[in-house]
Length: 198
Image 1 (cartoon, rainbow, N blue to C red):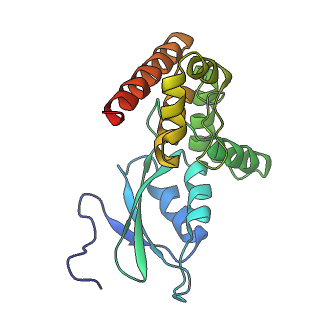
Image 2: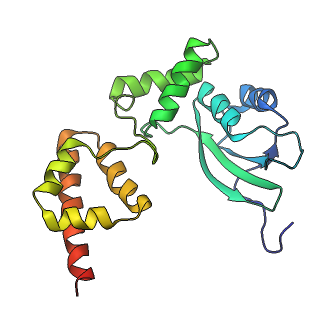
């Protein structure tokens, strides 16, 4: 183990040899546990371990979601998992995975309830694209075109900074919130350009 790196202590840390082992744990604890860190062996270690993609499938089936991952050492990392909060946003990738799990008959009642709640309040339709597939929406593009200084600043952003702007716009719950976020982004980009030109 690398010196100074420790496992988290705010929630239990458990390793699961495969999807079935994690599924068994969630069958018993999904309705009562506040969360967990799943200890996942890195590829190439030869240690039997649920992998990230398999873990996410099981989580979605039970209405849970993955959070931040932390490296433990050269062989392990831990992934925080928790029950999905009532208003948490959905990624497009998780929407697609959940849809497939429903079609395959793998979705459990708690997972189906999380999907139905998201469909009922519009979060399902507002699912955000990931960094590799997100695009600039027309309304943001028009606002940037109307503010050339902001457009130039936007184009100079790193991919992570650009994704942050796009994510804030895409996850807005109402048209009014979306318009405010676009206006704020244009303002922030204009101010950023001004600071950089000094």
